Image 1: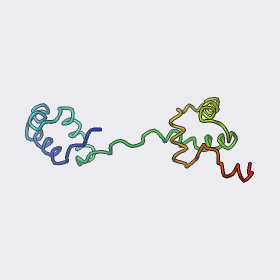
Image 2: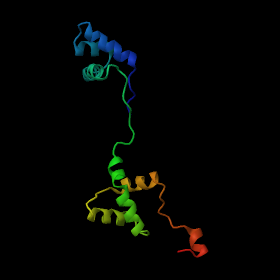
Image 3: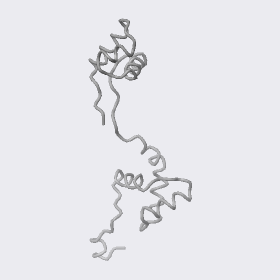
Image 4: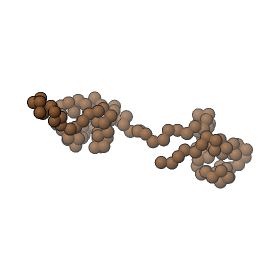
Length: 125
């Protein structure tokens, strides 16, 4: 993943443009791309600072989290179902999620799919 450039460099680039340099001239002088100059100027006008935004992270789990009650209800009904069987059942209800999406959902909610050997030895269902 690319490392964000410092606010100092961003400020110098924007200052060069404000002093009359074109985007390409400022970019060449300070070793950045002309597209970055445009983005930074837009950023400055939109939010009044040049702080970089967050990098990476989860951007798509919100879709399955909105349907958490559906997934958890279905999981309650199909306790011994595999993730693939659960995916198929969700698909019949109009919810398409990938295997990895469901696996990460289970991790976030601390749901394990392994059989509990201690419960089986104790005779619990």
